[in-house]
Length: 429
Image 1 (cartoon, helix red, strand yellow):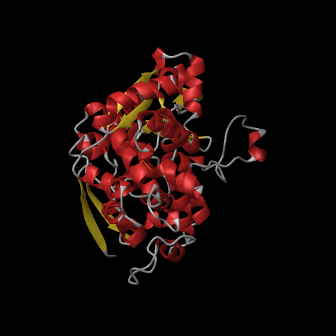
Image 2 (image 1 turned 135 degrees about the horizontal axis):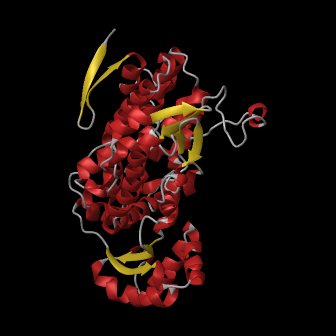
């Protein structure tokens, strides 16, 4: 059988053959080589130039290793590798940067786009390349069940009422195979394991270091779900703490957020006939499109190219305002309400509305990473199963911990900072 060896910077040499090799060479997968894993994170962490393709290869590898550690069948291991590889093919350029804007425009997030590509209902190649098969065709060739694959990627466990009456509060995936979903999209999944290790390596931020070998040696399956032995609790704690710290230090770094706000606003002002066309582009192609536009989109593309970013005009911490005011701030996360407030601030300052950008980070975190507050891994202790919180006081603390200590930020070009700060304080606070 034909095979190739991929030399991965995190996991070492990885062998690809069969369906994994065929999928790797599809245009849908190769587009990911032009999409940075951390979006505009390289503006803060210069080493963060790794791509979604590298991450997808890593998730496929980790999912396969977890399947082998659990003693799963070769068919299930293949399914895990395929799901791990395909889980991000629906990402737009710059990864999560445009997530909320495109959700507003298309009504779908990147996972739903992924499902449509898998089904063959959305073509992101658009006839540009005739050579080679598409993802959905290869899945058909190997008789991979697409509905199962989609549920694994979307994190949709399946409940069986005939079993629920016997095993209370347990969820099952078909014939007791929720663990397939858990390994791809759960509180202890291959996706998080790879991105924490990979992003920590490329940013140089040590918070993402986790004990993957220990996790691998202590995961188990019970009642159709992925669980972890009591001996693996310290490694699980380490992973969940690493996740929380990486979100604070890297994924929601204020400078990165400002760059993402700028890019999202510039894309919003592009001339687009069909917003789903953005999913056909990679990072460089999107910036090229922006540079071809007039006015603000071109200006922002140049600012990103040369790292001339907007500056913080106002940052509001949770402990600086009342709960009532905090709720008011959260309500303006809606794009239309946010744009209305930005216009109010701009008019009071005498500048164009697109030079005032409001960020409500917690709402973005909830959309881009819904697993953040999840610590619902079950612990096996002898013949008994208990919640993680019984063994670790960190569980509850991580559930209520926010990824940042600020709930609102207003950014603007440097020359407008003082005027915008005064107007934003008066209007928003």
